[in-house]
Length: 134
Image (tube, rainbow, N blue to C red):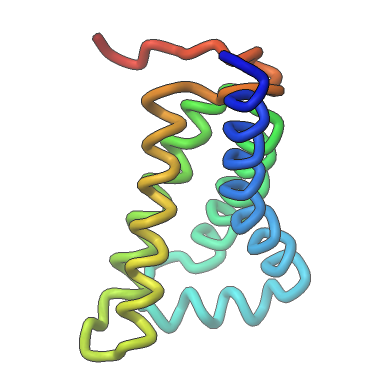
């Protein structure tokens, strides 16, 4: 991996992680509002869903940011993002929700690149790729 590839992969990983970290911080700042929003999707156990969202967005988001177990973090975030797209953004009659759904699927695309090729440069994992399956 050359210097350009290290910096570009690092920048991509940082940008992908920021949306989750910032969203997690927003959830910490307004737990009641977040739980009401989760309840609006008719999810069971909204308090548990809130904690899961915090773990994924902050825990896995930070892991992705620093490149620690980045492929596993990306896989967890991708699953979470897919579920949230289906649960919160599946009203295809609403143009705003269509955009939100497409945003989520686009983010999943970026996460799949990390799953496939590893964290890239400047990561705790040192750019090592974990073979999830042969």
